[in-house]
Length: 364
Image 1: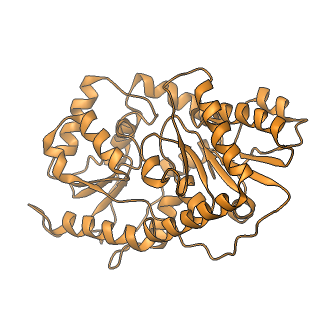
Image 2: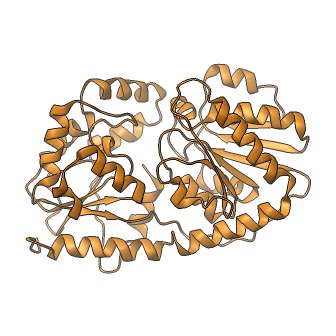
Image 3: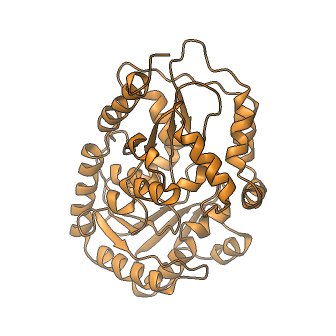
């Protein structure tokens, strides 16, 4: 479901092979991901019960492949009595509820804490230092501190030469590559971006905004006659999206919830980034060097301060093509060095080695 895991399967750490077993639950989730109401139902269910924790119960009856020495769990816990590693993928509550909101039921927190502290859970991978701090703040259990390990996401090196359009400035927003729900458009700052772009369009006549996102019917109607905004409302083949990345000049991601893989894609495609300064974003975007960070308030209505901040930073980039190019080159260098597949695999190999041979552990 996520390009990060596709990359992990295709380019595993040296000495390791990932074996996946796709059953009915995985197939069902893939099908549901293309059905818009499924996200609303999951969100409602997550407010009533820890759906990801309950999902782990369904996986408990399944046996792992006999030749596997370790289970690598992507954003969910393992309840079988076997050594396993948890990849948090995102925020701490997601292994309980499956939504990007605080899940405050103390009973479920206690159960999750006990599962994570067991000897079967060997390591807990978090993707950013900010997630590590958040994890400890959320669970407040020093028994888990030694298990935590930061492993940055990795992004493949791109083999292309950037082609700059001298006549038009193309701003790109990618909600998700392959998951469709207009609720994410709101959570990832889509409405603030549209408000900022509306004002920018009055000031500059050479702009184009490309939105790869599902949007509500109301937004679709509002954009129908806007020649400066191009909406890609359905998931498209990667080769088509690749062309959008390569032809863009600026990437914008004013999310209010969490860091996303698309920021690394933007770096790797030599794009300066304007993103909110939340979660792991400051560990990806170096303010003033590879893009700009803008403040995000915790508000449910339109964030007017964010709109103004985006307008200001985007204006700087629109008016300074040399700055865009310089930031873009620094962004690509950052992707190739700090967030390379090699760097990720070096860190992850250490985690897996320690999980198999580490303290109190034995090769399974």
